[in-house]
Length: 440
Image (cartoon, rainbow, N blue to C red; front, side, top):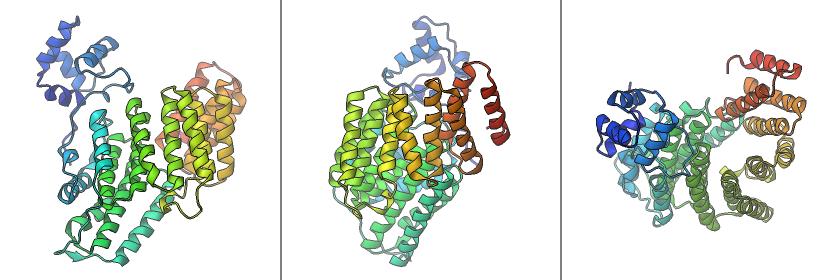
């Protein structure tokens, strides 16, 4: 059992040295009638109105480009493990802390944003060459166990593809705790140590993705940061580029668009020393991030670069974890970017092509791709086609995958469908969704 999580407003004002009454006085100084009891209600879960949020943003000096919702934009400081030294002892302590705490963190509040989030990424970039050393004194860990871990990780990746993150997160956390314990307490050679840290990095990356896919972004961010630390120990640039890219994806998914573009730019720059398939995905993610902020020229240039890099990729050169970086995936990245830029016909074309090319593979991705296609069709005035496509999303959620991202897209579609007024088609779709998914 753990103590209930503090509301971010508590951490934010305490970081400034403000009591509840002090914050209330500052609010009153800006023309509002805030009292200490008002602040107490906010810290117990009541959402401030728009005027109060505007003043709070000013008091906490929140940049205008932070577009996420209350209370995720509040500056809450960092957990102490985030600032551990980037060496063996600091990394072991950080991995141990995340192994103990991340799965318990069911808060919706991210722990880092802005400069606090970018700092670990810059630390990773500037980290010296691998510092892995042999370790003695614990139970022996050999190459045979590393081979089994590689097999386990490959299976976990495929399980995530098939079923989504929600069903896999507990298993991944157990895997991470196991490897973190081996690193801390095992006895191993330098080569085995490098393999253990690499396994920890990839398992933590998968756990971060599974947590984010489940809507548990605070836990997801902890795993990503642990993954970045672990991969710094090995010097594997390609895995680090992928982790920073996932951090950027989480940033724009939670409304932190400036963080997203900075992280994606960093990942793309560092990808120059990685295989071309890894570079292609890094640049495709740059395109997605800049599409989110409405910079169409930069977005299209990055996506064109991604396509060119993939076309020049050498077969067999990509690391095993990059098996999913292929033409359909790049087409899907383009389709999602076009969707964000309001080119719904282009988005439908690219996402439909990606879905067709993948066939029955990647049901979770099919659900998110088709969720955008359905809304794109609806926004183009093709209600019947949109509902037909959205039915496929419903079926995938009912029969195959559990992913908060696809559920969110389906909720968006249903909301926009309802806004168009009653019709036989919309009634049939609503009834179908209720039968297949219940209250989901």
